[in-house]
Length: 250
Image: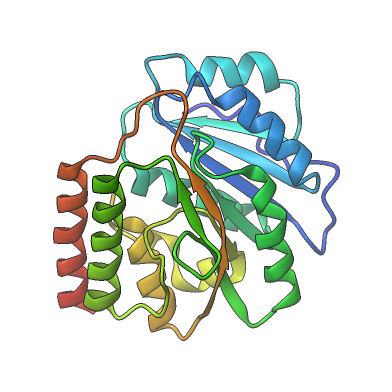
């Protein structure tokens, strides 16, 4: 595990500390411009890159371009892979730092960093809301560039999760979110178990079970232009089986 700098950025207000996390595997073509854009869009935030030892040199690019920037932090998971574990690590870092808000987005520009300020604004303006979800399926949300089979697969996974876990949202599988860190501390990040994509539903289920209020903000999701997607039919089936287990355990 490598941590460039675990201290908080000097720009952050004590009353509004924000950590933006990006979990990466082979995002060398996207990571440098993505971090630059996040720094511009959320100037009060620190950024944490959690990289699963990408063979394409993603972590090395972060060190080369942002190693001297006190707002950019890097953790390399040398012997582990999986979105669930990476998100848990990032969340725990945010809890340990004492942040107020934890934000997450994909590392391939499918989530436009320009949409982050709106999620954060809604979280600040609605103190009773624990999670603001960037939703592709709320009114006004859209998906650009996906083939029809990918849209149907995403819709089916979302509908399955909403029905199976009784989640009060329209988009429970998207990772662009803004969490109130106090709610993550209350749930206990160590209580999350799933390593795959279904961790996104697991988090919402845990929060709903504790009475958290959720809000959705419509976003535009754009298919990646560079690199290869990690979401496959096999992973979608695996996610559904994990959600069945979650529903049985609830």
